[in-house]
Image 1 (cartoon, rainbow, N blue to C red):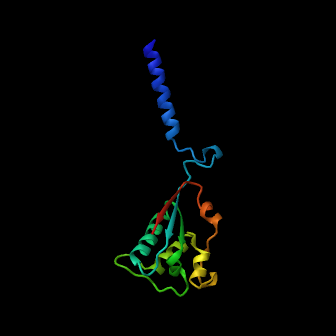
Image 2 (cartoon, rainbow, N blue to C red; image 1 turned 90 degrees about the horizontal axis):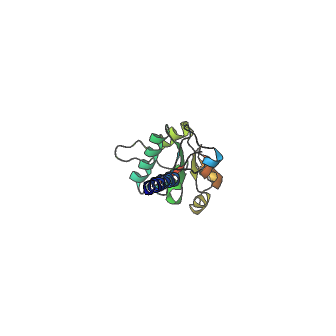
Image 3 (tube, one colour; image 1 turned 90 degrees about the vertical axis):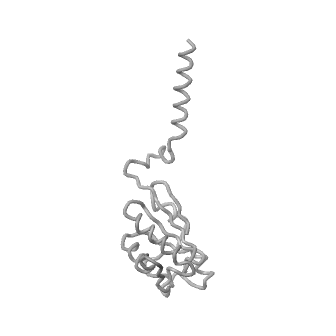
Length: 153
């Protein structure tokens, strides 16, 4: 009898662990399937003062764009990278900033700029490169149906 109770407790503990460890976010809504892709939110807050950081972020976005949903968000000094007048940023072995931004736009990757940071820089949405949009909160969550992983640069 003790062995039956022990086995039952072990099975129940295992079942509880399995249920609590299983990623069930969104499963009640039925939005996940084997085809659901997770999203990568890439946050860029630096500009030409840190070319390695900017170009690494853009490079990660380009590399992940074929297998993940990607969104880029530029704020603080980062907004200076996506202006029409922005100088081309180059560093080491990375493709230039203009080259990578164009590649991302061709893949229909959303690139957003913080409206408040634009204003703080004395710029407006009209100063952004073609294809770059002003951020709004809904775009942060609607670019993917999967989970969102954030990378900060």
